[in-house]
Image: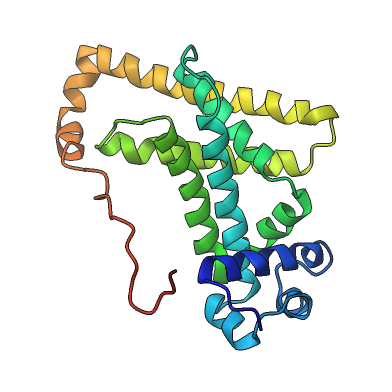
Length: 230
């Protein structure tokens, strides 16, 4: 058995399972097939991935988020408007998913009732990663509404992308532009409400209550008992 740190072990398992996902999905047979392809003790593999293929599907999605962040930071966005930055980040996130069949199988997996919570958390995490890399300064209710709106946009765009066979996925990018336009229209409507004295007065109470809503505290990433590290 090759002695590898936690992260490297999990990465090796992910690399090993991907060729099998296209045929068997993110399932236990795929996980067992991956174990047959790598020199990792099954007990260690199960300790790293207690849920087997499901944990690797989560890692696959999170790796896409990290690739998007890296690609965005490597791009000059200084002259872009916020709308263009959001569109770019979502596009980079989709382009980071080089294995479309693995994404398709993941979408099926996280649509199952027992994993729907994981799927929702991953989509929210993607939206959060986008706003974070854009430098979103909000720390109130807007922190939540921005991520909720982008989660809905991203989820719909992924489903469209999975069925898109146009050249260079041009139909997907056009669909993405339309969804971002919809979001901009919502923001325009909110601005109009704020500029209307009658409506502003009517919403004074709810706005006061919402002013107490703050974004979650930032929790530092630390090693926890029972985890592996170098």
